Image 1 (tube, one colour):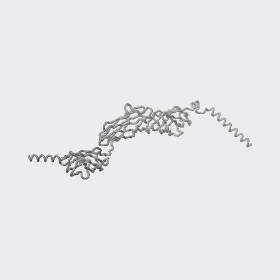
Image 2: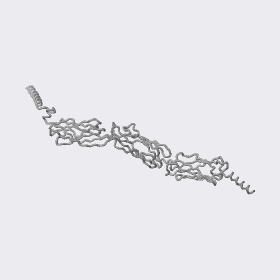
Image 3: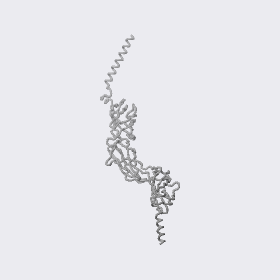
Image 4: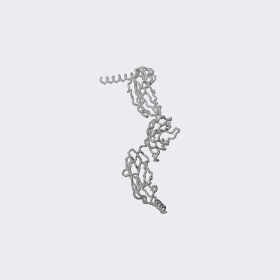
Length: 387
């Protein structure tokens, strides 16, 4: 009978005095600084509270970080008594490894008074990684009124995923319009260090002029930690329009064996402006060049023209060839050089007289007679005065 009473008494003592580790509540109450970066230190403060009605004795707390974190100092903290309802403060100083990546890092806070248990926590390390970049832009040949493809290549340079990547082209101020597709594309997920290409079908407006156009591009996305990003870039698209310079002999007043003039006309019939036009008339056995053989004309606007005059001494009549070398640039500064062969009419003396290009022989004779009479009269008057 006494033995049974003793066993009951010992059992009651154990029930009253033994509080288990699972009766400890632990909270992470502060992190300093708020942003944790690789290679730097930070402090974590925990609050541990005995939720039982009895004291917890000889309890030990040990913080166990993951591979990318290190506890500086003593990671083990001991308490002889943890009274009910009276929390204790646990502060740890940690260092983030210099090669740590962005993301949540796990920590385990283990406590033991003969009956061990633990709580798991995490902290966010911001490695300040450059994540999404606009790697390059490729385009097909855009010609006014025609369609083309614009390809935008994106690259995720971070180790973590990116989500809901939305790319928006702002076409409000440029002569482009979407062709079938919208000017907005979305990528659901980009893996760490992954890349993606987005194709936009565009049409260059029919009245667009050749040149380089800057287009604002907005990229909106989230990383795998739900942090939002909003970036604006500027890309360039080139509209090409091939120049068409028409040349012809506008007027020909060329007369055989005389100094006379020929006018060459240059008309821009293309869809792009022409710049720095230079014209050089080449030597020939059919004529001698009496004026300058090289002329800088300059710009020729779309649907406009410029003319150049050359003074020649034609050595033969009939149709002659005028070989010319011309050079110019288009609106995108692409160089063009070509050789022309234009035909010009050279009139003989009789044809020139009939067309009024030269004075007739009778008319010249009359002028000669008049001049002779005037000279004779002047000589006669001078003679009489002396007499």
